[in-house]
Length: 414
Image (cartoon, rainbow, N blue to C red; front, top):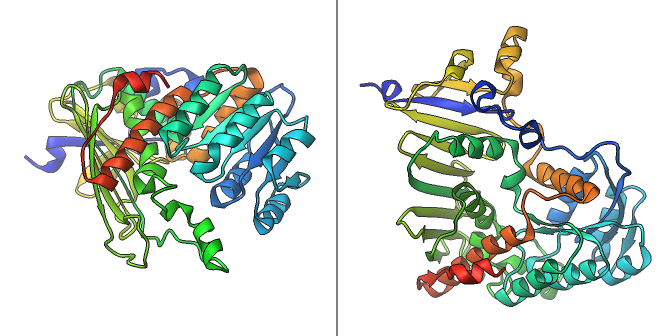
């Protein structure tokens, strides 16, 4: 039997797996800001690499108007002010909150260990808040924020991006419809050759810029990158692991840093299902992606695209007759696109492949829509806090070399 006979490769188009099969809620498939509402005045606090990316994405999100930016560093503050034309720049978030009463929503994009004070102050000021993920680097900060969020009357969103991503929403819908059946394994990776270091003018400035290389401040690769992917597993399965093991080492960047540049995790669920994750700065092969494998099919998700591999004994669905086929290594791929029949009639099937925006854009667009309409964000703070708690324990496992028990009651309390 040839590889093609054993399984059929299905590429999941950005707009959908199968409109004819799933008929998902269009609001889930194409999350967009609410229209017809007054623009939402937004402040972005933190103008480092992620903050600048956020400013770029918000510039194209309908319904968002960046009116203020904040960063303690003068150079970054000035660059952010230029990027967000018309926005006022501040050196402290307290000053911004005091002097910008029109700000309705705050995006927190500072280093992870600085989130708590900003989130607590923004909530006290009655602002909607979007917190970049991971949410905190310690349980103490996480629990303090969780307590404040529970008393808030505003929208508070966690920046775990998979939950607002149209490809991932559709993959999850397909999974909920029973396409995979019993899960066999979960695996994710984030492989990107990068020094992950920013040069500074002085040793002190370099330490400040490279906070993520300090094990006392950062959750490392497993937290800063892996947490987003672990959240995908939590969201798909509707549960959290009960233990985590981890190990890390310096394979390439032996430049005095203490943080491993290569990490592996193994997480175990209460029924024995295993999830593994690997991260490295030493090689880029296959980049960032997740595999969710079950007895009838497997998903491979890569943030802007997704694929499905069907097992030979999986049932055939009617949407397959609309498929656009393409080669994938030694197999024949079937591209699945929402509104496939309509697009096929127009000869435009290929236009549905791939996301037009980044996962960050969809996450921010979802927050703007939720804040403007006082609705629910794709990833609530409590859901994000539970994933962050798992990431904190994963970091502890890597640092100590000892397995960490994940207490479900402690997660539930967040």
